[in-house]
Image (cartoon, rainbow, N blue to C red; front, side, top):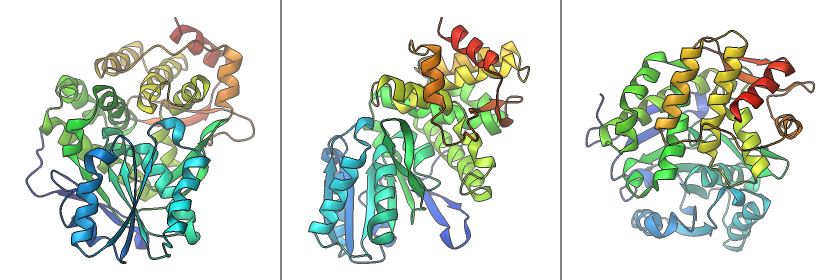
Length: 365
């Protein structure tokens, strides 16, 4: 198992002039690393009411020590806050503080803060720099990397947004020590996803080490974060704007997003919905002859061992279809799914409605 040394791991997302580094390590929030990636004098830190009391002062003090003028924006916590109103609160703060176009936004928090702050950066004065400082496992292994930004709409998740790459991603693994167990499990869903869609040896490793990951073994978490970021960075390098390959990163998400929207954002965590969605996508893959029963059982078992739900909430079949029709991958009214063909290889395709309805019925038992 790979270990993190005292100096941070440094990965690179290669996107030409939009390339940027990912740093993974301990004790990164209070050091000089963040300030090194802030070109101007002005910084606006966006965080929430959960993360702010833990880390905002440390990050702000480090930036001020480097001579930066710091503005802070503290939003309510929760997926249900990833909306237009929160975005306007960020803009209100930036405008009232007369933040100019050389102001760097810092997203200090999980996936909601990262997505929302990135969208604010993409659109404030038609684009200002931003830096991702992810504090949850889910954001460290997935959402902070790749430049997907946005907010939710009542009719669909992440339907309003932009592709906009950060200047850097700084993942301090020490923040995972304060992460609630439910949030840790939610992050493990995206780790499992990376192995299932593209890297069978990594999936095998996750199966063998899932207990260590749940127990927050630092070496296990370090390797899971690093390998997930390597996989995501490589996919984004090949397909920055999801013209084809990048869609495989949405394995489990078509079902998962439907669960989130159907129950109301925040009822299930994103990772919980994705974990259950992966079990459903595996079932659907098996019904189409792409994988065998053993593979479905392996995915269900590792999702359950991560502390994630494997049975979806009760929604009527017509409601499932209605929710899944609002998905960015869909074309011409066809619902598209990421399926395993086989484990470690993915395909994006529409499916026969009969097979889909069979999966909905079987998985809901």
